[in-house]
Length: 239
Image (cartoon, rainbow, N blue to C red; front, side, top):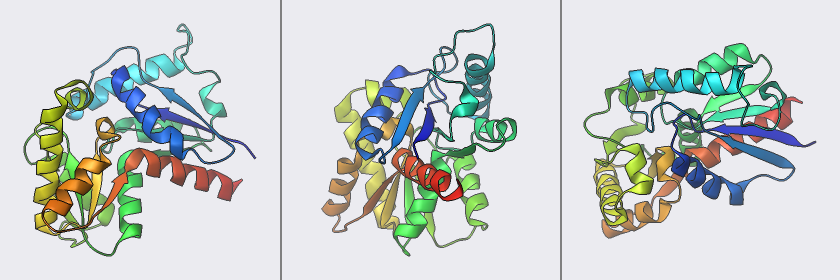
């Protein structure tokens, strides 16, 4: 059977969508077609609950407003699975799940953490965009693991870079931010590192190199690749 997947970048930055396409395409499972989508309006990056809500509404208008010309080639209900590529408990995930009964919907956060738990019994850490302690992400990790004190995660560490800056900013600065966050996570005990933003697609080597500098080898998880693989498996298993 042929599986049709829709990959949604819920922010309006086409550079992020292009990065996702470039990362996922070489890992597309056989007999699987993937459509990539981002809204025509809305925030260029998602950094808090307000921008998450705004991006959800922007996506909904483009995907479901009958007065608009849709940018996806087939009706959304004809896709077997949908991946929302925002590294959070993005509200679009739940809204699509409720609206499209029978369609498998997940987010890259959930896919990435699932894969990290399967890859290693040692702790994982998350390289995150933005600044500060990322309380929403910390809470999402605790919700997923079922505990605020789980030893399976060393938590997130931020790069000091916003979402769009990861793809469109000074790449020397981006590399330094990615490596700095990775070093912190490895020193906390992480042996699996998750790329915690769709804008980090293709940056695995920087993470691996930073870990080697402090004497460790780490496994790197890209939630977009993990999400496509998990959705593809779910769809095939349940049909």
